[in-house]
Length: 294
Image 1 (cartoon, one colour):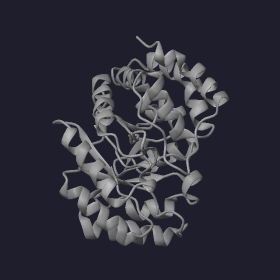
Image 2 (tube, helix red, strand yellow; image 1 turned 90 degrees about the horizontal axis):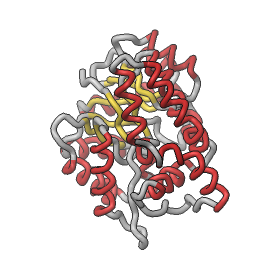
Image 3 (tube, rainbow, N blue to C red; image 1 turned 90 degrees about the vertical axis):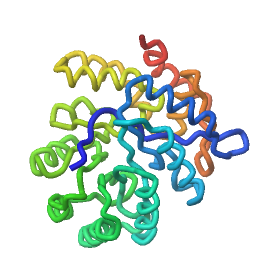
């Protein structure tokens, strides 16, 4: 089984003033994240505005990130689509580009039953023979990947883990204990990432890493060295900014956070709207500890 570890940023997609993908800014962004110590790359997730891009644009992003990646860096592609056939097609293209795994939520808009979820993910594995990290985010998808589905999927050797983003700690604990040795628990609720680590999450697919890479990587490294107190101290320092992120306009704030770090990545595409001056001021104040991080 592919072992997931470390901080893997759920990458934003930089856009230029005309709304086109800005690959020069993208390369600078990836270089800064690598310097901070990330362990891999997760492009074309929700933080990357994948649903607002054409298939050709998504492929260009996946190809660019795969070309940038170095030895030992894990590549996980977001290949979501509204239909199972679309997910299979996207996944096969990512596999051909050299990706090690894909990150998949339930197909959006359809709100499938648990039986349909099982059928969907099994069909993707059967058609692609690709490693899959499940992504459970009921607040966004409208349906949770419940234990009924996880029980049926956990022993499939290609279903390697689950990014748990419900924000409910009991759910993370339940996954960690019920599927120990069968599914890897991946931290997906950023403001309680330290708690995930305590329950065995060895990896963190992290949107905030786009604009907080140095401290989140330091936190992960401290925990791995056994310095749980230092890791908790960093989590406490980051929590105000994490909390503001979770209050709304998540992707817009990620991109503004990059700008605050001297690493502009452009605006979001519509229908995402810009941050108000008040929202910028609130996030900038919470981000000051990150901007000043040494």
